[in-house]
Length: 139
Image (cartoon, rainbow, N blue to C red):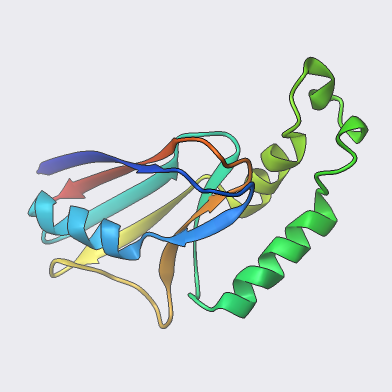
């Protein structure tokens, strides 16, 4: 069994954003040499997410609006967590909704997706460097 590990680094230039990382994961898969197995991709920060969905800009705008309605950033005083001097309690909640990681099957050297599926990094407290882990195992 082969094992491959790589960290992908991101610096989203705004507080929130979504980045399609499917191409980067496909590159990792090519580097790994794995033909059959699994790839795990997870956000290494508690205010970011990795998820699978469609790469459609209207959907991403809908996600942003929906998440902001469920966990609005302001006023920051509404959150107990922010009383520690932070201002990112909403980002923790948004990450909880969107999820920490994804696992995708690898079949014949390809990510085994359903129609329209792509992998995204979701940032909810940006403006600084953060990372995601890619772990691939298989034969």
